[in-house]
Image (tube, rainbow, N blue to C red; front, side, top):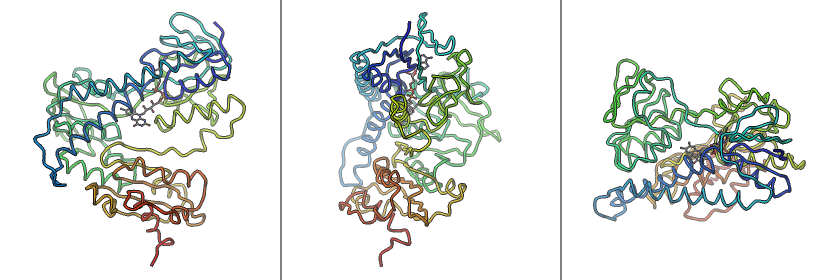
Length: 455
Ligand SMILES: Cc1cc2nc3c(=O)[nH]c(=O)nc-3n(C[C@H](O)[C@H](O)[C@H](O)COP(=O)(O)OP(=O)(O)OC[C@H]3O[C@@H](n4cnc5c(N)ncnc54)[C@H](O)[C@@H]3O)c2cc1C
């Protein structure tokens, strides 16, 4: 069957791209082998942040006495938490289905898609051909080659969100943002939690101050951190799982979550049949305009190298849409991708870390400030965290900012328009901020830079 465009995968880039191309008059077929909406809707952002909200509520209820509010003993009903999560996920999935159903010239085909030749794809036994093919196949949890792992019932991000009874002791392998979010979530649900990582620090690619602030908060909540160690083997069964670490140390728990990274869904895509080049880790190589090595084939989202976030995949769709419509000026290389770990305190960053800035030859002016100095933080008892800004002394442009604190994922956006517009950080100083807000703390951070200090 001939179409104008084939989209493989209904992820955060594929759905809006397919719908908008169809609305623009192209005949589009989109393939999906699992749940509509991909990782974000079904196994990523939506379910985790829904469950993080339940965990946050348990924490606030438990710590209310600090603000003079006493309740009874807090009990988390994990089955009810999971049911609520499932309802919210279903709502989003249904809205994806409706969007795809209502778009003109758009055909949804359920099944695994595999290239069988240049711009030729087989889906559920049928062959499809198109002038343009967009690959949006996403990624899945990486499974480390750990002796013994096969023999234990370990959990990934999907399976852990299906548990309806609280683990007695959850061991989390991996201190990236996924591991950190689940570790704190389950601690707040009431489980004992031990987190193990070979890096020296949580979120090890972030600012050292950010990692330290998060580690302090985790330890305060009773999460045990076993850092800078390598797991040698795993053993156990349904009731107890043991990790043998470097030097013979053992960590034992009732459940094991493995969150050590992601790998692209490209191994069963038939990439070679289409002439699509993959890098050493299996990611699809693309240029700044999302072109793969195969003519007419583009790739977007988590299956390409780069930061793996929903907002990045969604932005991919709008850049590629404009390029395909012959009107684009932006490319995937000239953009800023902010990040947030939805822990408490949240950890957010935009632009460079100090380490990366120096590695690129910058000599930034740096200011840091404790989140606990913000009036709003004191009033609301959310003082954990720290902030940091890097400024290019010649241009006064912000090179990067990092915030650990309450609503850091919201606050980090204060920097985004200024950085995208390429204007001086003076704009952040001259703007007026409502008192008392967390945002005025960000202004105080900028005003801690020597050049903006007032006497
Ligand atoms: C636990 C967790 C929490 C996360 N939290 C956040 C967060 O808070 N914020 C954030 O920005 N990001 C978060 N992410 C990352 C985010 O979910 C992804 O970056 C985003 O979903 C990527 O979208 P995508 O369009 O690249 O692909 P995906 O959403 O992964 O979609 C790819 C789709 O392609 C389908 N597919 C694959 N191969 C084929 C094939 N051969 N044929 C047919 N269909 C195929 C898959 O079934 C899938 O539905 C989280 C991820 C995880 C795992």
